Image (cartoon, rainbow over all chains, first blue to last red; front, top):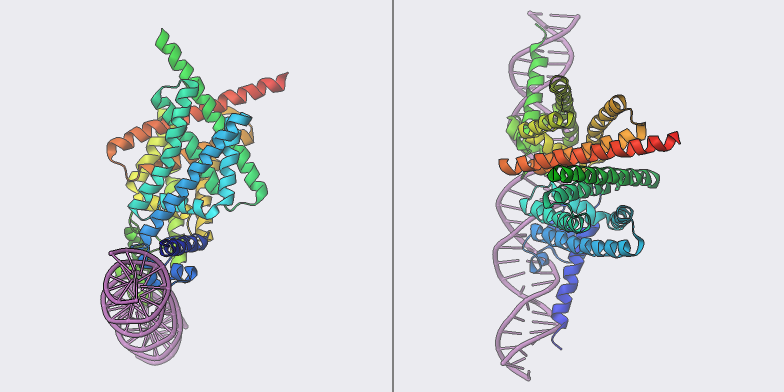
Length: 208
Length: 208
DNA sequence: TAGTTAAGTGTACAGGTGTTCGCTGAATTG
DNA sequence: CAATTCAGCGAACACCTGTACACTTAACTA
């Protein structure tokens, strides 16, 4: 056999990642998360941490990347649901909120580091969010024949509203969460309908 | 005279607040800001800090409150400008972006602590943002005769979009900032027009 | 099987942290 | 003028941090 060593290494690597995610709660952000704490939680000596990551920032970026994977799975899931069920807005919102509820710590990480202290982090998170914007932009161009900049502005608005509602819903009791979710759907309708209306106006203008 | 002592105390209190604001940069968040650092910057002994604040959290909440004052001045300014110049969206956005540019550190504080580690902080920031939402809601009810919940959903959407663009614009070069600002205005138009359209629909529905 | 590689360990160090305590000296009071 | 208040100080405390270094020991290689 020539695998058990690499396998064990991967195992403790995952233990470190899991330990970090466990410690990322509402009260404990990544920036006040110490290498020693993570090592303790992962069940290894502090110095062993360096066998896997150069420093905490490298671990953090790994976490953001992992969350990106999860997010993209989420998008695929939403797309499949939409193909079957219809209603784009309702399905997308429900799917997204489901994700936030199931992975609060991952979402919290993205949320915080979006405006956090490290430029590398901010960029990494922005990249993930841009995936959403870009994909949605393409969809809007394809589906509604919007011009590029029009579609992008709309997509950005939609993503912003969804993402922020996710943030706000994190610490809310279930009933308030539902209210928020209903309000979000309303807001998405507003902006989508407004975009349609303004697009038609412009097209009429072009014909004259 | 019976004032010079209290006066001096207020002076160092302000020095502490200013020191904290100075240290709140893009690279240095409130949570990795130490009592000793602040004291050093303010030119006092670490222990003297306690003569003014029980701990760092109390200082932080004071900062949030102060930023609230600044924000409310901002709102008044915007209102006056609107009375004179008209265009609600353009004026509001310009005024807000002006504020963000002039007080990046205060805005960064609000931005980060909105999803930060301390519940007291999060509540304080939410309170400030709610001022905006509520005031805007009243305006929309008064101006457009929207029903309460309709107005609130719209107001929340508008505030969310504006606030987020402020956040995104912080580290952008001037040209990108302008593009962002234009896009924001477009998004606000979308959502405002959509809200009008849907409101008229509902009113027709009521008359039948 | 003998030699090499490398994940994980334990010790140690220098430096930062929040906070307690007893003190000073000037402003304030009566 | 004498007594009191109190903002600011310096030393000391216990604690936690990241990281360098030399080591063990099990897995891999040739």
